[in-house]
Length: 279
Image (cartoon, rainbow, N blue to C red; front, side, top):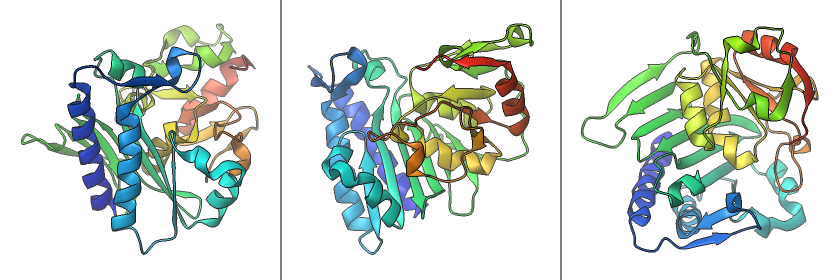
């Protein structure tokens, strides 16, 4: 299945790059704020995957969720998620604001859950040529110059340790205890989940603090299981081992912020948190 997924990811990257270059990018908004921006590219890729899945996965009991079309399931969406064998969770264009401003921090995320458990995932940044994915043998790979002539494949291993001082986004969600060596780290936010998760998977950032919608993190979550990273719900005080619809709001955003990292980093970070800012 992963080869079929990667072929789709390649097609998405080509479409993102091609449509970005078109004169007069077609932009709309799902809400009142600029961060709710949606483009023609989002919508075309969403429709593309529906057709692609129907062609290649017709023998499977599956459900597709993505940022642009999940609303069609209405109030039954969680029931449908719980009853399907395979759940494909797609973010057709993550980093839409960057994309609209011709900033190369945008990409596509696709996560596959099998009976609720993270199974396969792919994250692709076409303008940067970086791809990270995990196969059904729980092997994770980082591909530089992906889908190009100079493609370079690197196996990622569970036992690697990142020495990066960078931590994504923690200060935005939590008030921190500055007496506990917090100043030894630099807190950053790139406002593109795919980019953040690629950096995390490849060790260029150490850990991260997120409060995302399901499609933002599904691809990354499926990959992290192969790398020894865990997801920790700070408010509930539990690790997230599988997809549980009770952890999601009705619009499929995680109810609580969570830390992603190695267990030792999670142990440190949860002890420097004073309170959740409730963002």
